[in-house]
Image 1 (spheres, one colour):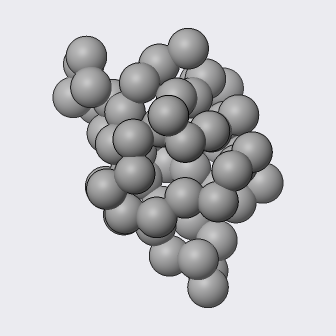
Image 2: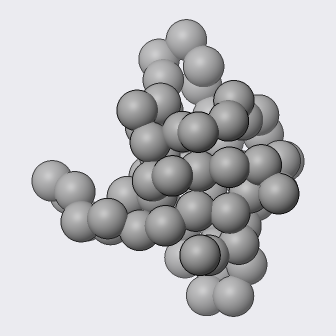
Length: 63
């Protein structure tokens, strides 16, 4: 599991970005990859899965 912080999340459109704490990489997250509801600045754990345009955060849970 990776740890990160929700940098941006638009709940109306159902997507956002999570910044990985260890690598500082940003990953796309879609509402279908969420386990918990998230908001900007939430600390989260997540896994990575290859998507159409690169790695996506999936199985996202608030930490």
